[in-house]
Length: 472
Image 1 (cartoon, helix red, strand yellow):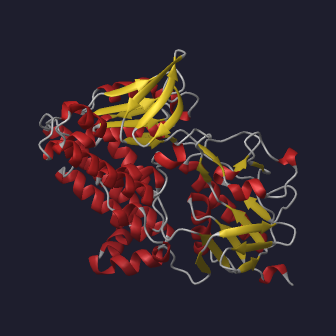
Image 2 (cartoon, helix red, strand yellow; image 1 turned 120 degrees about the vertical axis):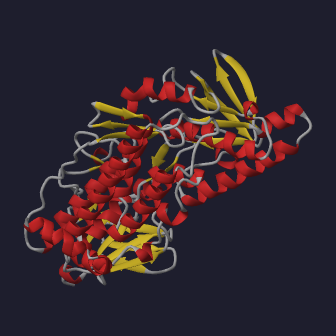
Image 3 (cartoon, helix red, strand yellow; image 1 turned 30 degrees about the horizontal axis):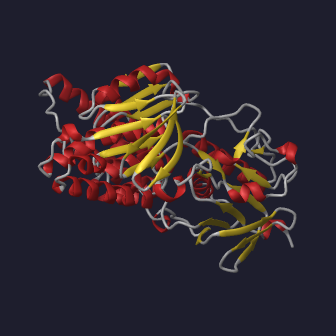
């Protein structure tokens, strides 16, 4: 069969897979595209904390795939991949369907790694999907309700203690968010916010150890100490056993137990089982089992296969972050389009634009190009605005951004401790940040999808106005 008639199959609709599909769609890719994922919705993982806190809505953070494509060349298949046969160029699904491909993109991401710790998978809450987030939010509210009516002090304290395993970026962002959020919720129930405990278990001495965000360690430490509830970091702690209402850990060669009804797992990720099962030569994997790829993101043994995101490793390793994955997805799409045009693929380059951390409700840090840290409310605005600009499909991007900015302007979310009244200059600064985010989003949408932009906003006369300004 002529390979040019076979579809390009994309496995995994996370940042790499989805953005590759979107860019192929925008480039009018001449071959059919089949995007396969077992979930119904795209999950913008960096904003799951906002979904947990209610700062952003479900539709903003995890839009349905069916709403994200504007071209007929993409077929979205909600199914689970059973096996990948690289030699036969075939993908088998659990439903019994199969797809033969001309090109394949592996964007399967990673999975939660519980490191074989007893009870962790059964009793700890993971935090990787919208379902995880909603389940955790429901559980936390139930614990606070039970605590508000518990007469026994020890029982009440167990309900009010939250243990977070892992002090990387996810653990720190979770701790800072809950340290502002839980006092807010519990105060409304008539509870004493001083009884709430947030405990982070850190296997190392330092938080954010070995992470891209390591330079922000001091800023993160200060933020954890100034939340509505103090965050306790238990350093050099090796978690041994997790049960329904306790964490057993070892520290300084002593076994200790923390009583808690809530254990949140942010300690790490592992290789996707499908990537692990591929028939690839051992020397073409790194120590973690990830696939070694060429500079073009192709598998050397199977050049028709592209790999991106958490599944791939280049000669110079890159951090497993959203900004890396979506840039790789866009450039893999560029190479796929070049191949379809009879041209050679080019090396993929990724520009690291800095790191972003959520450090409480309405507060954050944006370390621009990992050199210029912007903290507090300004850091929060930069972080939110940056992530919202990356939301897939520009109509959704614009709607989500406007919804978020409305909340920011009217300060619908805040901490329990009253904040000092904002000065006129502070409000002007916030308003300026808001206008920058809106204008950049509009211009980005207009440049990328002029037809969609003009059709959607024609009644506002904004397209005509921008055309006039551009001519002057």
